Length: 323
Image (cartoon, rainbow, N blue to C red):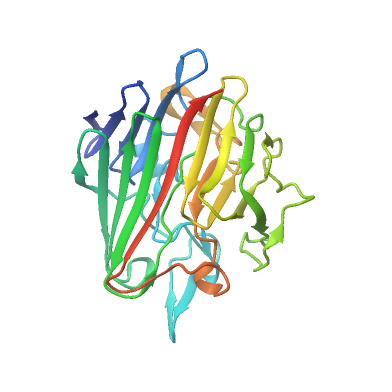
């Protein structure tokens, strides 16, 4: 069931609820996930993602809480890339680099393309040359919540010119509903990760996680809050699992993307969140399924090229349960 309500002036919230009482609330502002309500092992519901109570707060702050980010999630070095012999200069919004598409999608109003009992599709048109990217891009994000407590997120796009694409959801999860995520346990299905330089741009190396702080191949406590790195996912669809021992909440992520950016929220600054909550460093973590950072400038990485008149489509599923 989907219910619709006003969200400040000019925006809306769409609440998707299943037969178990689990709900996902999405706003047309940035096609962002504003809330996810799930039960703990005792049946007590809590909101497990960070967000804001008003559109003004989303428009004021960065950090992309719950947002759909694009055209290119993560970083592009030097705010430029080439397709063939043509070089494109982008909006630089993190020093000399482009982060999450520059101005990007996160503060844009999406339109409703489709809505039924369990599915919401939001659409945005990005003009040719916006933020420097070639081609008029029509981008869609589908949210579907089924009765197995699975949130399906499907990104699709087409362009009038050859371009690059890397859309992802930027939800900050906290399965406890409050406090720090450093006590959460995490598994990432990756034997390798992409080391970065001082500007968080990949060096090009695919380094084994074995013997390092980046080895999450078996479920373990996060403990350290410095992570903001892309992991090279192993073959198959399993991406990651997240668990909060105190509440018993568990999340399993599958995807057809080649990488996942694990960000532990180490750069979150203190601010007011939903329902009087105060967010700060390590209040939530992101598991951003994606192409690798700086792939437009790294031909050895999986290709993020979207050819003219072809269709980009990628799927990520978050399954919520308790243990």
